[in-house]
Structure formats: C-alpha cells, structure tokens
Length: 347
Ligand code: SF4
Image (cartoon, rainbow, N blue to C red; front, side, top):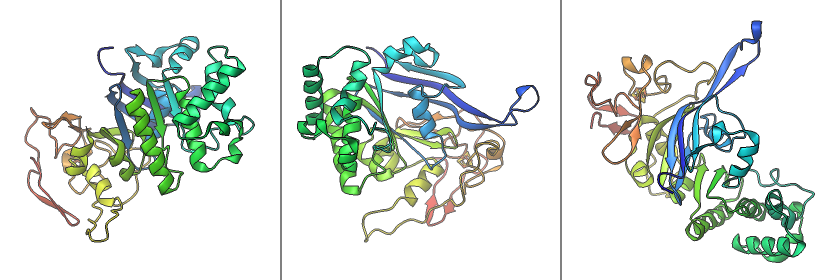
C-alpha cells in the first residue's frame, strides 16, 4: 500500500437543532469543521482538546457511527464516508474502536470468550474449538489468563474489562484502532498497564491508532503526532516531541501550561487563558479562540486562520504565530506577556 493508511479530508459535521417552517433547522451545532489529517500504518495520532472541542465526534465519524455533513474519510484509498451499508460492513473489519467505558461497551450477558469471538462470527463460521482457541490466544495477547474466557464482564475488574475490549477489537485483525478516551476511566496504575499494552501490540502487529484524549500526560507517552482541536477545528498538528518542547499555537501553549506537572520542584506556569469554550451553536467569528486569546489582534475576529506548514513539520492556524507567507506582515509583530510566559511573536 502506498500513501497513508487513513486520510481525512475537510471532514465536517453539523447537527441541525429543531425544525421550523419547511423543516428548516432553527440553528446548527458545528461539532466538526473542515478537519484534515492523515495516519500512517503503525503510527499513533493523538487528538487532544478540552471537552466539547469535537474530538469524540471525529472518532465517531471515522468509524461511520454517524454520517458526515461533508468531507472524505479515505481508508487505504477508499472513501468510507461514501459507502453504502453493505460495502461498509466489509471495511469495518479493518477499523475497530475501543471505548471509554469498558463496562457499558460490553454485553453483560455474554462471557469474555463470546464477546471476543462475536465480531469474527459476523463474518465467518467458527467451530466451538476454533472459537475457544481464538479467545484463549487473544486473552493471552492482552495479558489475561485463557481461563477467563468463561467469566462475565461483571466478574472482571475495570482494567480487565478494558483489556477485554482491546482483545475484542483485535479479533478482526484491524489495521487501525480508534481509541476514544480509552484509559481515562481507569486508575493511574492500570492506565499505565493498558498504555504499555497498546504500545506492545502496536510494535508486534503494526496497528495504527487514533487516540482521543484530554490527558496530555497520556498523549506525551504514546503519540507520534498530536492534533490539537479547538471548537471543532484543528489549530495545531505537530510531531509529539516538538509540540511539547515548543508549542506554537496560543491554545496549545495554554493547554500544556495548565496540565498538572508530577514534579513538586518544578514551578507551574500560570494558565494563560481563562473562561469556557464558547458554544458550537454560535461560535465566535474569525478565529474562534479570539475571545480567550491574549495575543488576539483585529484581524483575528474577522478572518478564519488557515493551517500553515512550518519548517519543523507541524501545521498551525494562527494569524500571529503562523501568518500565511504571502499575506501582509502581522499587525502585532512584537513580544507580549501572557501570564508568567513571555511570548516572542513572529519567529
Ligand atoms: Fe489568537 Fe489570533 Fe492566533 Fe487566533 S489567530 S490564536 S486569536 S492570535
């Protein structure tokens, strides 16, 4: 296969609210706006942002659990956003999902073995012996004893349930797994075990991950690249190391500054932005971050910034930090203080 495993182009999702005269919606929730990215085989792309930024909607759109309003989702070159129900079923084998709440995503009446083998049986008939062998193999792969195949989800711990969810996702040998806040409901020590398990499986099986998370500690541990979302749009997409070493977008900078630091000797930077994420029903004009941005200039409330490629391989959407090369010089090209951070502009 040449090219990326997954390519997302201009993905958009609007939810109409209410229906008035001639079924015209009263208003629209702009959950995802013009999102584009790609994921290579064996790569982990993390999508981060505050709650309500649209990251979980992106996960649902990738899995076609909801239909997009616009844009394309190309998996191995085929646009799955445009497939009919029957064709989509075959493509679902290649893409699986791990959910945030392991308990509610597992059928409480099925045993662990039945849960693992159920997806495969949707595609091919397996004898009892084959089912047991498959369940035992996958349970071992995720670090559980094969005998646990006879247990119900209620007889497992939170970490074991999430391992079971991962084993179910692996049963169809997918090339891509979408993990939506897959460790956020777990204790910290169990989180670390599950993250290490995912990394091991990626190395052994070459699986790509789209990992949705609000936890920057988790993201820094597992991501190859990170997409930062704000109010439905990607504002910065960068190699992981570069993003944490030198965030460029003011929102990325604020997220990293606000993240807890597990080191009592390190002085925590003051979070440079305040306030809530605005409503996606009536988002601010221009750059939607401008009401909270300490660097905002006049242009920010008028014009939506485009994602501009930078020398170190990242793309950033900001009129001040990443001006479009052929546009006039940024109107506020001088240093500015953000809380305790002194921010050099126009690098
Ligand atoms: Fe802030 Fe303007 Fe950049 Fe948006 S475009 S992040 S408002 S400086």
